[in-house]
Length: 313
Image 1 (cartoon, helix red, strand yellow):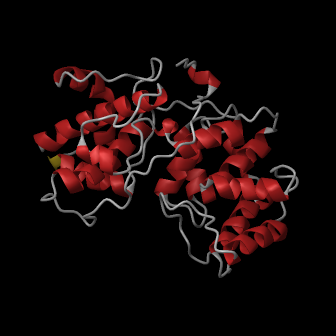
Image 2 (image 1 turned 60 degrees about the vertical axis):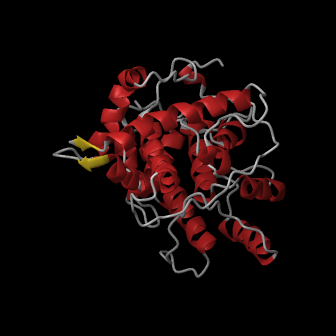
C-alpha cells in the first residue's frame, strides 16, 4: 500500500484531537475546547462511536434502563430503535405505549402514532445516516415498511432465536443483512449495537465493514491500497494505533484501557473525509462540503458503558 502521508497523519491527529475535545467537555471545561478552527466550526462524531449522543441514549434508555427484559425483547428494542435512530421517536412511542416489547408490539398502532407525528411536521428519522427507503413490503410510507420488516424479523422468522445462537458478529451480520431494507452499513451498525447488550458477547476485533463515508476517507488517505481490502486497511489502523500516536507525539487519552476498536477506526475514516473537505479541499470526492455546523447542546451526558467492558471514567 502507498500512503498519502499528510492525510494519513491527519487521521491520527483528528482521532486524538477529537478525543481531547470529548474529555474537556466531559470535565466541564468551557469552550473552545480546541484551537482547530475546523473542529470548532463543524460537527464531527466522537473518536469512540459509543460516546456519541445517540449511542449513549441507546445504552441508557433502550438497553440499560433499569428494567429486566428477555433476550428477544432486548433484541427487538435495539433493532426498532436503530431503524429510526432518533431519541424523540423512541420517546414518542414510549409516551403512547406503556413499554416497548415484542409482546405488545402492534404494527397498526405503531404506524398510527408515527403517521400522526409526520402529519404534525415531526421528523421521525435521524438524518445522520440515511436508512433504505424502498417499498420492500409494499407500503408507500418508509416507516410502514420498517415496521413490516421488524414484524417479519421477529414474529414471522424468529430472528431472535438465530441471533442468540451466533458465535460471531460476522455470523449475525449476514443474518441481518439478508433482509430487505438492510445494507452492509446498516447491518454492521446493528450488530455493533446488539453487542453493547448482555444478550451476546462477540469479539469486536474479528469483523468490520467499510461504510460509504469510510471508503471516501480511505481513498483520500491511501494513494494505493495494494492488495489490501478496505476492511484490511481498517484493521491495519486498529493494529498500529499505539505506535502511530507515539510516532506523532500525540497523547491519545483512551476511555478506560479500551483502545479504538474496528468500528471506531472505520468511523474515523468517515470523519476524516469530512475534515479533509475543509483542510485539503483539493482532494476531491463526491462530497465537497460538511453538512452540519457545530451547535452546542446544553444537555449534559452522564456517560455509561456496557458493564462487560469494565470501564470506569
